[in-house]
Length: 358
Ligand code: UDP
Image (cartoon, rainbow, N blue to C red):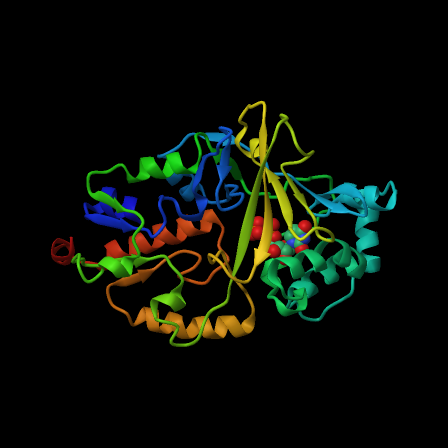
């Protein structure tokens, strides 16, 4: 939003962030060993939107990267999303795609309505695979049973009958060549953009005059929780550097059924960096801490609708991003949402008003 408003329409922009750095949760940096890591857990860029990809390409080159994940199940590292190899390795079979399709049909539990995250998986691959790959991972990550979460959560992970073991199937899959922070720095290098770090916007909103605000924090916090607290899920990250070039067999290993952490990510696979050492991050789900995920379920959607209605009646403030619109958005969806909001703001305003609020 800052880049568009400044470079696209000559606005003066002040970015206020309570953290000591830009880039939000996509921030990356070099750790003590000199390895590029993502401070807030693995961020892997993928999109089907040509517009989003072209827009970001103005600020970064790319390293083509197709993400792959293994799940540790019954003592083996198996491809997730579940595919032909997952099933053949898990059960010691030699099925074809066609036979796997028949197998899924024989074990799937028909559901008249796909409402929850349990319905999505059980209706496709049956209860046993659901228990091995999804139930416990989801309980650990969300502290809720999949039956208590919207279908959209586990529907993020497809089921395949071929051997495609990529985590995503989007048209554009790549990592910013020099990292996310460098990309954001280039977006924000504009004479109209000033940056104020280590500052809660509430400390300065009465002091620094402004025409309009783009708010990207939690929407319930903005309105002093007047309709109650919206639940956000958090994570604690444990980084470990090992004195060897490679630590694990895949970029990410998921641990649905053991360990208190959900997954372990080895950054060098993502970034392509070459280094004698390697750094990984373990993710421990938490109820308290920085808000990272909205919790998609009907009762939370109902609370959010109240905040959303209020947000729409709040002139001069525009809510954008995962926390402010309470949507489990990927990075590309946030970029798309921002580009749309920008167009709305610019399209909606007559030139005279722009001059007044600039
Ligand atoms: N999930 C799971 N087992 C897995 C991978 C994912 O049960 O091996 C479920 C879990 O509920 C998770 C959701 O699918 O929160 C979405 O997974 P994704 O990898 O998209 O999560 P994110 O990367 O956003 O944390």
